[in-house]
Image (cartoon, rainbow, N blue to C red):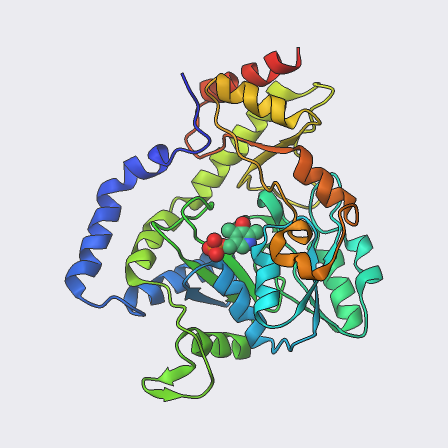
Length: 367
Ligand SMILES: *Cc1c(COP(=O)(O)O)cnc(C)c1O
């Protein structure tokens, strides 16, 4: 039995007829962009995420970019970002001419360390972008307190953590405006690219709705220089079906993580995920760390177990950010995570036997 890194079958097979019927419905209605499906999905996502406004957009990167545009980020404005995030968080800042200012994560949770924020704040700092990495909610209370003290906005990158919470508040509800992604492999995935902004601010909601649609509220009347970043009716129809299962899929991810935790505990050179007090984890990824990462990955490949590395190069060491001239060694925690992290198979419907197969292969490597 081989265990792939990700299989959609247990999620998609049982809802196949329902999804195909939803697609056929859009096909027959002959209305494909910004129609009743997007409107209904936005309302249903508001209910799921306990938020006042959801704006469906083309993808997660656009969601972050549109949030920053609506917040009027200007060239040269500094924005605090995690040193260990997926590059999309940084790219959104760069798109609006802002300067990404990296801050190191907590070395146990891999999330932005609220205690390190103030040292990075300068007179040019405008905002903070916490990323709920791998599916664990950041410590949003302390982060919001720093933001409030310094008059900064907050944009959460909630691409990996739909349904996670910090002290009962759902991710995607703390920041002024927040971006999420429905890329197929995310916890709520479309059948292609899709994303959304969530906000409790009616003014930002109106701005982002206008910006995603050519800067126009009334067709052919353009108020601002907007973009074309709309959620398709087809993707919205699919997302409406899948959203009904998200809570159940999250519980399955948490069960799989618990199985891994109990089967992989006690290995000296293997660090398991650690969940902060007050945070919940929805396990978009189950990431372990070891100094012998390359050899472990090779061993697992040979045993028929799929793994991936999230992420092998931190943004400050990417060629795209060479102009920032940040030498290796500047962000040692991010660099160590990049050198040691390995994501084990994790998908709703993965069986206990499959988890055990992975665990046996991991243990055999270390014994
Ligand atoms: C996936 C992801 C994004 C970008 O989403 P896309 O829909 O692929 O544009 C942004 N941030 C993080 C942390 C992500 O994991």
